[in-house]
Amino acid sequence: MAGKSFALVLQPLEQRVGRWFLAWAIAIGFFFGGQIISLALLMPGMVAFFLQLDPTAAPTDEAELTADLLAEVIGSPLGMAGVNMAWAAMIPGVIVALAAFGKGAAGYASSVVGRWRWGAVGRSALLILPIFAIYIGVSLWMDPSVEWQWDPNWGLVAVVLLTTPLQATGEEFTFRGLLPQLMGGWLRHRYVPALVMLLPVLTVIVLQPATWYLSLLALVAAAVGPWVLRGPLGNAVWTGLATGLLFGAMHTHPSIAATLQLSLVGFTCSMLTYRTGGLEAASVLHTANNVFIMVPLALTGVSAFSSAQPVAGEDWLSFGITALALGLAYLAVHFAMRGAQRFTTGAPAADLLVSQPRPPMAAPVVTR
Image (tube, rainbow, N blue to C red; front, side, top):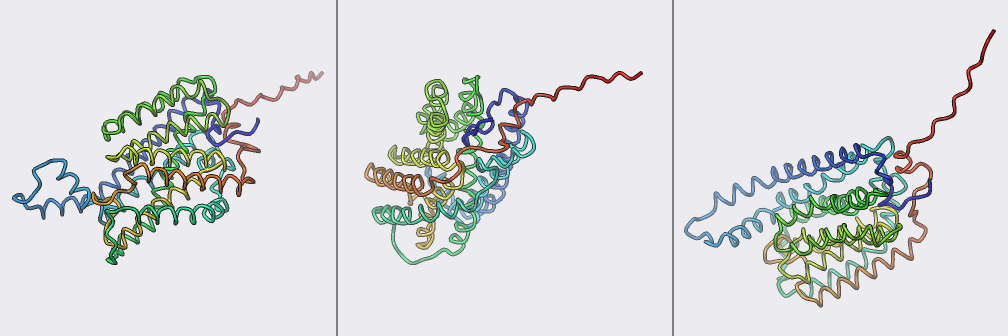
């Protein structure tokens, strides 16, 4: 079988419809398992918040009270760990989900090689980290809401360094791995990707109604993309648009520029995944973005989840700076890692889904 790009490694899924549903069930189970872990870690902070709440001084506006609750609970080290571990659970979740397709398929949750490539992590880190250190540094310097003071929250710093790489990688396994593979694996039934996106789109609309328009655009990209953008690159573009828009919608923000900025981060991660044949470079970029924002803020004593500290710029200048940094990061990886394997070879996961012809049976020997 010819080599497949990362999003197409399960093609043709028409051969394994039952296992496709099983993979979905496993992934959803791990997702809700991660939410339970997150809730368990968040619960102590929520209980403490309401026990300390003075009814006479509490905000009367429900939205303001909710914002104070989130800032207090999620802004703590334990709360930060809860949020991060919810997505970290999707790393084993996606691996086990792909294992439903047969022996050896689980490895293709990471790359076209069939395993996680630490060499690709190191090479992409050398390229991406310097660019993002400068980019995030400039962005934070331009943000007037950041109060630069040395008041480190070392617990928060430790949690960010230990769990944020897992959170970022878990989101990459979900948005740049599982979703594109379960959409792109359909060879003839090109209406299925829209059905795949329907559940996450409806979920994000319910949870983040302010960004409903981006969620609907993600659904449109999944519905139209398979018909107009063909081939490995075309598939990477439309799956990147669909998952990137959903990614931005999920990270709701009062500024449309900041929301689109997050969507652009998601789309860039999709193109890095296509260019390198795996999730390693995208995970490095995502981790660098989050860690370089969260650690400096934690050293000033605040969390990136605090209502006073936006995690993305609020104007179009910030969007332009982000686009420039993402473009430079992609070009650096594109040219410096041109030798990275982009397509499957040997026994890809796709081979597991195609019925192999049985060897001809030998004619019976007549004995006398």
